[in-house]
Every structure is written in structure tokens, then in C-alpha cells.
Image (cartoon, rainbow, N blue to C red; front, side, top):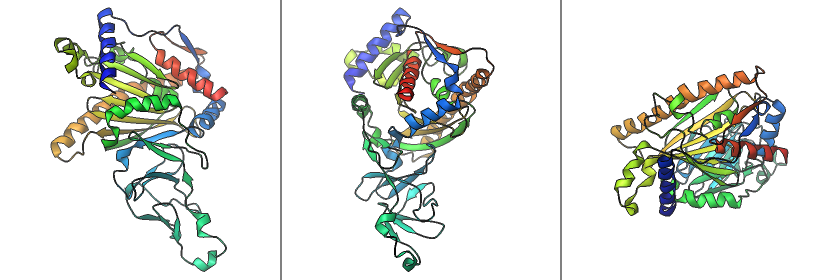
Length: 380
């Protein structure tokens, strides 16, 4: 975020604090419960949102140098992410073109990949470079049996992939405007500290919903983060289907005692970006949290979440390790012990027939925007 935008954001938040209000939407929004439970709706979302749109699959630091690779399976597809010798980010389906076995696991550094089934060998660029019993496959040209590529791009520290082979990456002008703002954080320099994979019994949208309002902060989180943040107070800005929320820490009042040109705004707010459809990027203090939230392929009442915490520099000392581990533990404790148990209870309640709709108040505009955008994308 550029300095001018930070100052404008601080002005808005301090004004909200003075007036004890927040940004309000024009009307209450009713969200059909069936959109969290219906298998047909889940199938429409799977096609429209998770196969036909660009997906953010990480930050540049996940592939820190040429020759590095990482597998990615949270999207329900076997993805292989690579950093080429020239530094280019490329992506492939992690599927051997012989009999379909995975050619890579985990992450690391390699010049290429060897299928564990029959030892077909692929270069870092995906080309088939060797196979035992070559004469037995004389009719199958190597060039026709390279790893299947996916359109991939690296923009301002974000890694993007189109999940469908043969489809190009097309970025909307709205995302380009948001990426200009994200460029101010220097995301390309952040290093992954740790990744956690969570599987929870709630719809993927319900998991994402918990990030989209601070109305619950001093109720659900009264013993954890309530003392840190202002309750039910945030800004909300849209970039087409994508959007940004900013919630002030209580310490933001310290800015009033400083010259405006010296304000260090980002240390006094938590900024949440939703990269539609399923990624939540959180700037908090000096750390970045990337939440990738995916639906279960079979059950609309289950979700898979992948959280990675990134640090501004590599963690090289025991003191730094302990510091960032405490931060990660706090994030997980709040979300896993407080947010998601309530969400799972909500998911079970959806099957009880108590209501046909839930309600998003005028103070929950981000929720209304998110669900309106999903409805538009799945019905078009």
C-alpha cells in the first residue's frame, strides 16, 4: 500500500473511532442457506470458480531460486510449481504422461523429475528427457509426452495459475488495480515460515466468511484479540470481485500525537485482502498470512484450508524462530479454537430447517459483496 493510501486509510479509521461508527452498506442482505449445503450449487461453484478462474497459489518466496519446485494439491488438482533456470515461474500438472503417476512430492530443489513408477524423466521445463526401454515407445514421440503445462504468471510477488490446461490467464482490470496496491508491500521478498493444512466440517464460503467482519471480535474473541483491535470497526473497499478490509488496532490512537507525515499506519492496522474467489491475504504487523480456502470435492459441508505464514526476512536464529512461532500459534489458536468451532456449529444448524436465509447487516458489507459476486459468477 502506498504512503498516500495509508494516510487516507488512517484518516477514515480515526474518523470512525471518533464517531463510533463504521462503513455501512445500503441495505441488509439475505443469503440463502441452501448455498452452503446444496450439492448442485457446490458443483456450479467448482466449475465456475475453481476451474475457470485464475487461482493464487502462493507467494514468490515459495520458489526462492532457480531449480526450486513445490507441489500443490489443495485445489483438488495435482499441481507442480517450478522456478526455471532463467527465474521464470512455470506450472504443470504433476502427472506422468506414461501411466499417470505423480512425478514430484513436497518441495525442494531439483534439475528435473523422475516418475517413481517406471522412471520416466522430465526436465525442469517439463520436457520428457528420458525413459527406460526407449525402443518400446518408438511410436510415441517424446515431444508429445511432456508434462502438461498450465498457464502461470508471477505478479508483484503473487503466483497465479489457471487450473485448466490450455486456458490462458486473463486478469481483470480490477485485479490489476489491486495488485498495484499490493506491490507496495514488497511481497516478492517475503519468505515462507510455516504452512498448516486444516480440514474442517464447514462449507468453504463459511470458512472464508469469518474473515469478513469484526462485528464478532469482542464477543467470540473477548479473551484473545478483543483487547488488541477495535470492535465492529473497519473500512471496506472493492476492486471488482476482489476487496480490502482494514481494522484498526487500539494503539492507532498514538498517531494523533505524531506529525501526519511521520505516521506509520501499517503497524496500527490489520489489512485483509480477498483475492476472489478463495484467497485471503492478511497483512498483520510485519507478517503476511496467506489463506487458500477450497471446497471439498465431494461434500459441500467440508473445506480444506492451507495457511502459510510469511516473514519479511529468512528466519535464521532461535530467537526469531520462537518469535514467529508464537505469532503463528496465536493465529491458529484464534481461528481453530474460536472461529471454526462456531462455523461448524453453524453448518450443522443449516440442516435443521430453522431458517431459509441468514442475514448480513449493514455493518457486514464485505459479506454481502462476496456472496453477491459468487451468485453472479455461478449463475452467468
